[in-house]
Amino acid sequence: MQVLLIGGGGREHALAWKLAQSPQVAKIFVVPGNPGIAQIEECECIDLSLSDLEKVADFAEENSVDLTVVGPEASLVVGIADVFKRRCLPIFGPTAAAAEIEGSKAFSKNLMDKYDIPTAFFKVCEDVETAKAYIEEKGAPIVIKADGLAAGKGVIVAMTMEEALAAVDDIMGDQKFGVAGARVVIEEFMEGEEASLLAFTDGKTIVPMIASQDHKRANDNDEGPNTGGMGTYAPAPVLTEALKLQAVETVLKPTIEAMAAEGRPYSGCLYAGLMIKDNVIKVVEFNCRFGDPETQVVLPLLKTDLASIMLACATETLEDVEIEWNDGAAVCVVMASGGYPGEFTTGYPITGLDDANALENTVVFHAGTKQGEDAIVTAGGRVLGVTAFGSDIKQAKDRAYKAVEKIDFKDAHYRNDIAWRALKR
Ligand code: AMP
Ligand code: GLY
Image: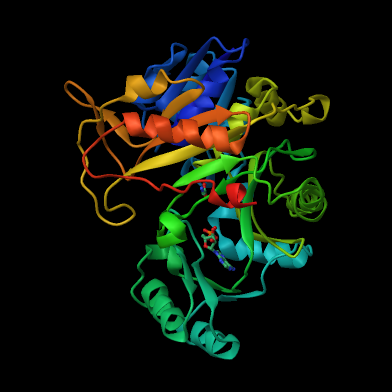
């Protein structure tokens, strides 16, 4: 089977790495890919513009691609799956109408409200006055979210009234996130512990993956600004079997049914960000794609052939597939450019990648790297996802940090406490 994979970050490196292990997969074209992906024998990185989706579909047709897999939300939100489906090309990922579950927070909150899917109380506000009046009514702490896509930065968890009101001015007044902030969702502040639950779905059947936990804050002890994610581990013990069942029954299944009822059947990977408190689950957010860096720790634990699962999701036959998982655990430590998520410098040579990859049960996923003249160099905020597996979280964590020690680039920044919540239990 020939696969086309869209994307070039750490998540896509993990997807490519796992797909390459499938006995069915002979070749993976990756647009645009990255230097880590390029090292996988089955992978060929392709320089192809993603702005013309018909041309991407032409490429799939001309190269006898059997399955297309989409990593990033941006291509999904603009309708890559619609183009492929119209041309009868199997694709793993939701249509534009279904991807709105991530593309518009107002849409997803209204959906949850209409179908009784548990989430924080909220109000969608179209102008500054209404937003501020609602904040005055509810008080702090309170959460302000830009409606549209803002690369994970459009959420302000305001602990004081001043912060909350300033967030409204930033998002709606100064349009800090452009059109994404034309509307805001103002939401109840939820306490508890978070977990990410990803699920495979073909629109009718939905199967949860192993739960994972991200570390969104930049620094140790969950301090500093929110990032795209500084590290993950799986399984996440906070989501016990009973709670996972609760998530399936109260969140995953109702959401898939709701999307179908709305005429927006959802297939691909559904990412549910959950808040857990006193054995009750509420939805923090939905994403229309795999998590990054959740994918880096979830996929290594998957036993069943990923290509078969994805093809079943694309052809509405997921009911026929039994999905199995391996025992053990995985930990991913993100090595970022110093300054991220604020300003940072790129172009620094990275050393020690081969030594790290040679360690037992370790794989270094590339996120923001580039092939320089004589070395692989840094090229983004999150540079690497150093990932290791073990029989338990402790062993996986020790192995991951041993690999981190082998790697070096100027101003590298990483957290030292990935998986602390699991280890504290
Ligand atoms: P989101 O992009 O919606 O996942 O938000 C980013 C992060 O902000 C989440 O992972 C949470 O840590 C935090 N957050 C979002 N919504 C809430 C909420 N209602 N209460 C508390 N924290 C939240
Ligand atoms: N790691 C968070 C996300 O993928 O949205």
